[in-house]
Length: 438
Figure 1 (cartoon, rainbow, N blue to C red):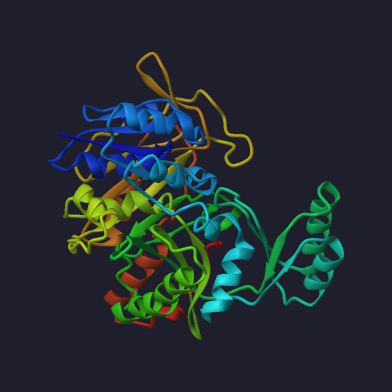
Figure 2 (cartoon, rainbow, N blue to C red):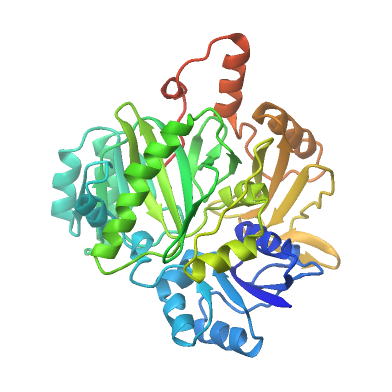
């Protein structure tokens, strides 16, 4: 009789809750605050705000929660793991000090430099004169990152120095002490590594590739993510192994040396450049929408896996190898600026299709939009080409026209088509379009 608490509200947390609920040991998964779309026999939203750490701690104590898993970054950066550990409550995630990897881009850059990990060259600035000098000496395009937490949307790529100067000058007019990281633009292909890290163990999931821009062809504004697929079969195993050896292991060693040891989910955003893999950024939790296409591949017991890591053990994870999981995000019209509220959100029940809900409310017995991204619809098939065709055949037939991209998984489909046609170019040739760094 095991109970689990997942902290967060979106489709990522819905996927986490389902993964825990699949365990034969778990009788109930509470999600705080959750959303009405994830309600099920063994999944219960509890409505506690994810940033109300005292209330979450008290709920976990009174409900005798056996394990808490933090899905969202806000409570991690606020120190929820420290509070739960002080109360003797088992929890999986980084401490407040270690969560600076995502909470402060300058902290992350310092750790990268100390460990000698390949990444984009950068300058951290905290004044307009310093920012102006950094931009004027940058090559075009110019990448500007907000130093603090920005919900996956704190990166802007400016085509010219003048565009960057104009935008950044506006930021300093609002706050003359704004802290920014201005860095070189990395060219190549992105993919994401997720590493579940315990005190004495580590498990790497299958890699994923997500799509950050709002519109087809990687156009439009940066978003929290419009779709993803996994595994990324066209990446050679040795490429992924090299990225883990060069970008993940040294970072974990450096975090120990810095007296901020890391436990929890380490998200390594990788750019595969002509010079090899380089870090775009680190996050301290699972990505959204990548979680929705990664976790369903786990054939092992997710609860047992995470509990073993918390207890300082090294679990063995089993992942499926037959299919590709491809997920498309449905968003309310107007996202990410002014999403329309109150639109009907369809429920989909079909073989090989999974639905994970995010910004939804309820009107009578119908789901309606209450946020920007409202659901991730995931198809499963033996190839990316078939999974893409399957999910879009479903989405294009929906009576309600929510916004979604029509080209999720395009790089995998292009690669599969090249292999079929005999044009098996190496992975770095598949760079006609590039998604924006998180």
